[in-house]
Length: 461
Image (cartoon, rainbow, N blue to C red; front, top):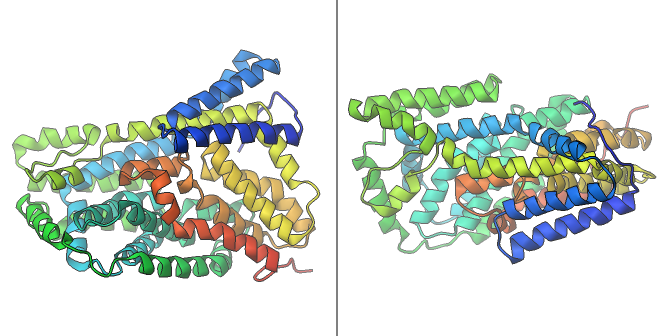
């Protein structure tokens, strides 16, 4: 990654004050005023531009910072587009409806949230993508929860927890590969070392989801029976409808690039949808790639569950991601983030302070920039030498990057993952955040490991 241009050199204390004002304003608008995140982020950008003008930073440089930040998100935006098309094609082909049908059949109300957490964890490890797991299997579980009258917020928390556990521990995951390769740590050594904090977080989360799961799901099963029959009547339930999922899984295992993998899943689903749909409706199938799949059913709840996807459905997410990353570009250009990183990484010697500071930096970058890749790369660059000087193996830092970087992004309402998950699960980030136990526990456990010294690896002499 090329170093970004900064116009100002400011003190860490000043950078911290500006950052606190920024985050306080955004949080107040989202939590207290219940605004969509776009508006406070726009106001934050305006505030940063005013700050830059007061510091005599040229307007063209501020605009360049905005553009540079937005440019960093183009890869994620392209993936959003392809996932939007994937969802609509998987609806039309019966892939997601078949997942729903099977979930209705095999998942009972008892231990429901724990089962959701376990299954999304397994799928996440298999395909190495938290977002794809949430958009496909996760969407099915949200539908099941709705039919059974269960909490969509807790269900979404279980989905997010499981998807990010799978993403974090999968050798197919881009963030896992990024964290290990940035610090030149063997990939499987990195995954093995992460198990010290990840497995306890998984077990604790699983127990909490068991406790929260209802013993008696109530009258929801009457709706479940109605939904299952309606899915059958719509001719959406077929064994071969699952073929696109297996194609996607195999290509992920083969480490085919994400866009090619998603495109293959979309094309294979379209071919199946052509088989199960009359020729007169083929044009509408292709149109649905943009506008989303529209369920042809008189059952209102089923129509609401299935009518989703398409490029158009991603526009809310994409616009927020562009705004958030543009804000991040300004934070770089104005020297605010470099000053914070400098302040965090200086005069660090004790292991406990190193772990806590690195974790805090990863979390802070997620909230400031809304981007998990940058939370990994920037924190690695800031702390790698400090960890080595303290005699700590780089695998310690790579674990912190995942525990406090990768899994925190879905908890940020304006973060890339948080925005996407809110869109595909139809549950606001603030609502599912308290129930994303795995994502909340991981940073705590990694900091405790640093404080206690347990599982901390030393450099060999």
